[in-house]
Length: 357
Ligand code: SF4
Image 1 (cartoon, rainbow, N blue to C red):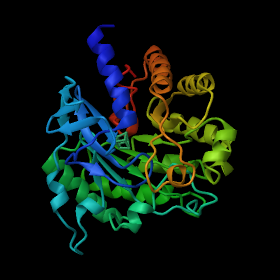
Image 2 (image 1 turned 45 degrees about the vertical axis):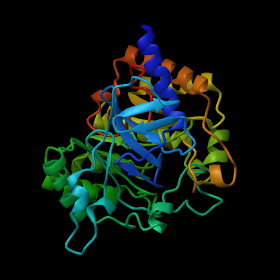
Image 3 (image 1 turned 60 degrees about the vertical axis):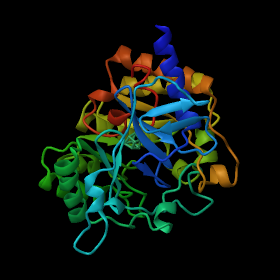
Image 4 (image 1 turned 135 degrees about the vertical axis):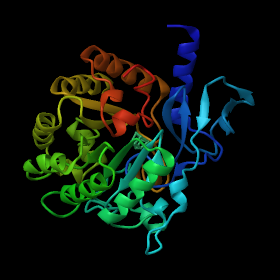
């Protein structure tokens, strides 16, 4: 590997962990999953970087400076999309309904509340309801509104894929059926837009077929950790859904959506043994499930930061795990870029694509 490649990889890892100072035109505050970040392209790949006023990295136009020096990365800030300036007939700004992520990804949380948000049950890294409280979004997105936003984002901003995620609802489907309704409406308006849905294992596995039939082409069923002790500590509510139930849902999703159109987040930095994390990722790959390895991102508004004071993992740990998982993915011929839509296809919250996965 050339010195320049190693330097780029090291900077990309540091940027994922330390973040940037500056105000990228496309950014998000609190929300589901990784958030509070700015969106750039680095070397042609999407990069969603934490916004951190204490970071040694500074974004200045299309350059990233370290100690005042340009670090020589091929960086471009993602421009604010034109669809953000539109509003629904009821006066809701499109920006409150869906966000631009990474390069050409339209993303929305269709239900911005979660039955697991009570403090004793909440995932300690999540701030899904904080963006609702701040007025940055609306609680439930109507399918017709999402369809209008998607149509505008494709027409005005060349969006190429869409991610629809949801907080968990109290119903047996855990929110998947509203996702299916949203997918149907968006596909009716923009039939060629690939959509990924993200949900917990729906109680009835037949719902996975319903999501596909509605028009979704990739699916994320996110477990975050395969270690039950870590799950109980970090996600007490979600840990009530057994790993056996996750495995059954992944297997059914691979049957319906196909190999490498199914993914799950695995977070680095929750205290899991790295060898076990990589072994778990290999098992997922064997099943046809893409392990989307992402560093735990500490941001205010989460219990992990506000109560536990947990910081980001070390660069060594993130590099070690990402390099090993990327190698296993390459060996299996399962690249994130081959997914039709979703986080693995986007890759901006992970360093896996930089490592070759
Ligand atoms: S990886 Fe997923 S959450 Fe991160 S920017 Fe891309 S689409 Fe958004």
